[in-house]
Length: 149
Image (cartoon, rainbow, N blue to C red; front, side, top):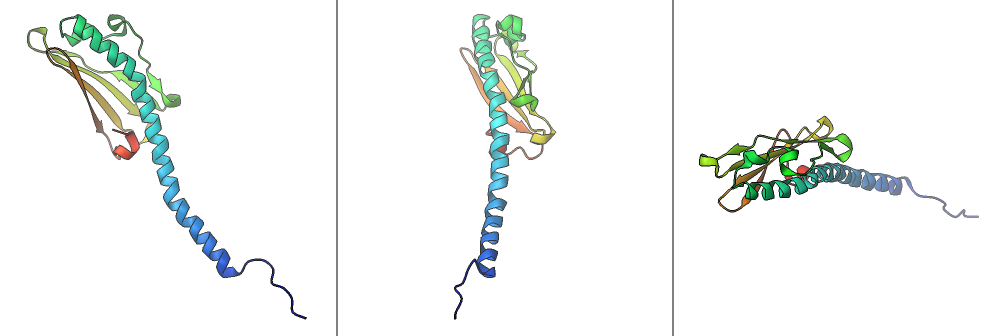
C-alpha cells in the first residue's frame, strides 16, 4: 500500500525562506526611511504656521526680518519639538538687509541620533514684496528619501 505524501518538501521550504529573506532585505530599510521621512515632515509641518506668520510680520514691518525674530513679535508660538521629541525645532538668525530692506529669516529642524542627526535649514530670503523659502540639508546620510527635502 502506497502512502499519500503529506507536508512540504525541503526544497519548497527553502524557497519560501529565501523569498521571505529577500522581501525583508528590501522592505525593512524602505520602512525605516519612510518612518524617518515622516518624522522630519512632522517637524517641517510644525513650522509652517510660524513661517506664514513671520512672512506677514516681515511685510507689515517694511521687509525687515529682525522685527520678527521672536514669538512675541510674530504673534504666534513656535513648537520646539515634534515627532515625539525626536525632532528639535529652533528659530535661527534673522538678519536685515541694507537699509533694513531684505535680509533672511532662518528656522532649523534637527533630528536626534536615531534619525541620523540631519539638520534641515529653512531660509526665507526677503525680496521687495515677498519672502522665498529654500530648504537645505546638512549632516551625514541626509538624503531626500530620509528627509523629504
